[in-house]
Amino acid sequence: MKRILIAFTVVFFSGMLVLTFTARSIHNASLPHISVSRVTMSEFPFEYIDESGNTQTGTAQKPAVTVEQYENGVYILYRAEVNGELRDFIRRAEMIPGQEYGGFVEVVSGLTFSDRIVVDSDRELCEGEVMVL
Image (tube, rainbow, N blue to C red; front, side, top):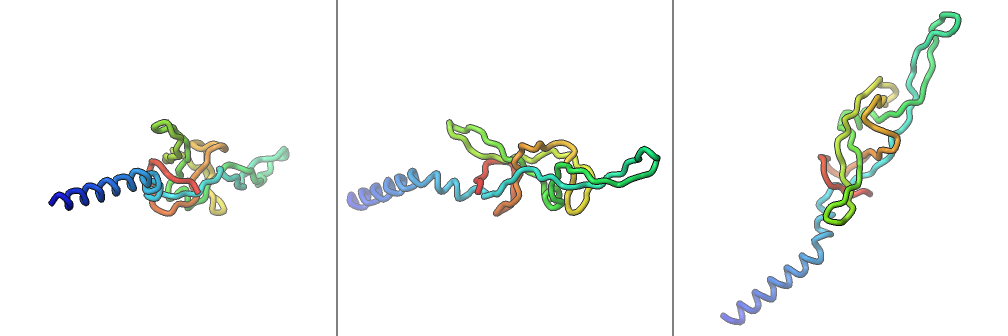
């Protein structure tokens, strides 16, 4: 009986030691893996009246996201310190859309050029910690 108890104790503490040293790897494997990029610029048509009173059509470069990104929800990547360690997190952007043209949706507000947005993920996203590829 004493040998069984000693064997069980050795196996238990060996398992705990392995889990202690692999905890970070196990945690990282459970996180969504994402790809990010900056907000893109796309051309959108607009109408204006020239000096002679005629209606003209032009295009303007405006910040935009794809229609698919907009429909699935636009997530912004940010860094925060947790337990003394910098980690990457995402939050859903409160984006106000403008016109849709050529597969893009104009960003009126809610995103800036410096924001890094999620363009691809290996699973369904929700606000929280992620791994950046």
